[in-house]
Amino acid sequence: MNKDPESWACVKPECVVEGSKAQVRNVLAMAIEDIALLSEKLLVAKARVSELDALFDRMWEADMRGVERWRSANPGNDLVLPDRSKLTEWLLSERFKPEEGEST
Image (tube, rainbow, N blue to C red; front, top):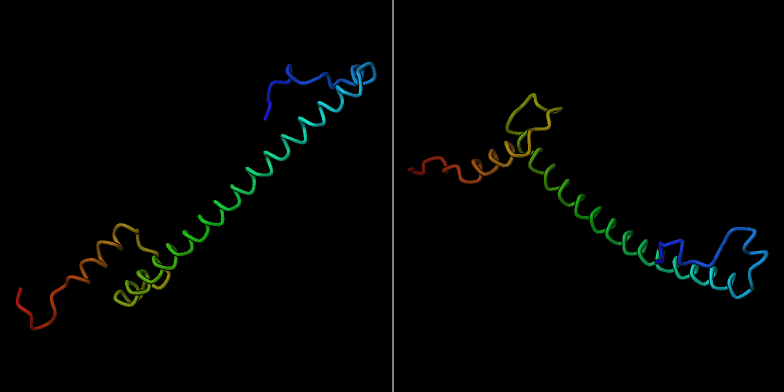
């Protein structure tokens, strides 16, 4: 995309009137080129947004599974959303807690 307005043919009304059809065609060609480039960039950005949305959804679902386990083990905290690092610590301690009757 050509961002330097000095390199474009004159697009002021007085120049267009005085300018040639070739100048007008050049300006339009550059504008069409810029639009095509921006459209391509927009498609790439939309694909990235979709990818990040899906990743966020998977992370949220995993977090909520952990929160539900924590809430089940801590009655009365149905409206509490624990700190993520504390939740991870708690989940790991639960996972590696010795079974009853198992010696430590």
